[in-house]
Structure formats: C-alpha cells, structure tokens
Length: 233
Ligand code: NI
Ligand code: MN
Image 1: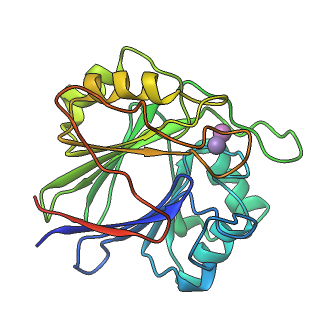
Image 2: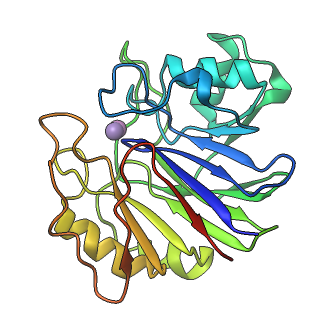
C-alpha cells in the first residue's frame, strides 16, 4: 500500500498510510492563506505535528483541527505546554519532544530533527527550538523528512543517513529559509529519492518560483496546494 501525501499549501501536509491511526497532518496553514484549497473542517487526522511556533505553522487552524479530530499533537516541549495550558488540550493528547528524540505512534515513529530557525508565538512568547520531523510510516515502509523552516546545515546529511527518508520536504522560498539553490544542496545532502520544495509563493515576500531547485541525483516533485501524490514503499 502506498503512502498518500496531500500538500495543503505553504508547509502544510496531510499523510495517510491507509490504516487505522495513520493519518498525520503537519503545519496546516489554511485560513488567511490565499493559496490553500482546504478548509480546517476538511482535514481528518489522527496525529497533528507542529514544527515551530510561527503563525504560518502553528495557528488557530491547527488547534481547531486537533480538537475536531481529537488528534494527538506532536511538538516541542514549549509548544506542547502551550497546547495544554492555553488551548486546553488534554495531557494524553499531547506528545512533547525535542531534536534527537522520537515518539512511537500507531503508524510507526516521529523523530524530531534540528532546524536552524527561530520559534515564537504571535505575542513574542518563546516557543522552544524550531524542529523538523522524520515521519517513519513503518507499516508502508515510507519515511518522510519534513525540514520545517530552516537554513541549510551540514547535519542534513546525517538526517539522511540515520532517517533514510524516501521523500524530503524542503523550504525553498528564501528570506526566512533556504533559497531554491540552497534547498537543492539540502536535497543532495539528505539523499532522499524525491524532494518537494515548500514554503514558497505563499506571500509576495517569498520566492515566487523554484526554477533553481534542481538537485543532482534527486527527483524533484513540484506540488501545488491541494494536490495529492502516492509514494510506494
Ligand atoms: Ni518560521
Ligand atoms: Mn514559516
């Protein structure tokens, strides 16, 4: 059975391994995103993961989706506390972690990776370190690296070696993240078979194309918001 990957726009994704507990949402940013094709009410998931605290990753959509689905929330320790203390999510629905650690799930495992980026709430509240994830969909033998928001760093090679991702989702919009050229270097270092540029074209001050995202030896998949893709294990 393949893994179904739906691009929600910006850095948002929905994954589904087709088995109970296997629907995972990451960083939904729908309301206020003119490029998004989904509404929060469209999203059905068992797990929802947040890479960091910035509003284009953690926002009211994510909270609403978590509550509507009674989903398990995966995030760094500070965001996990925020979800419980400010948003009233139940203790047993929040799974905190931090880079280097991982959390066992019904579908396999979520590993936290470092990301070179900041993380705070709209009020300036410190929300831990920015993270990425390697989502190990063990039941279908597909692993996905979602880099979150990040600069290029050489340990991406290690993430590739240890996580063995099949797909790398890499920010390529510049300004807050890698440019397409640097994201291509990241894709080469991670060494996944497929790479998808994300976090571009959403706002005027982000890059509007990824023409220069052309890593050597990696298959580039350009996804449009709302688009679904199936990856075989
Ligand atoms: Ni950010
Ligand atoms: Mn961002």
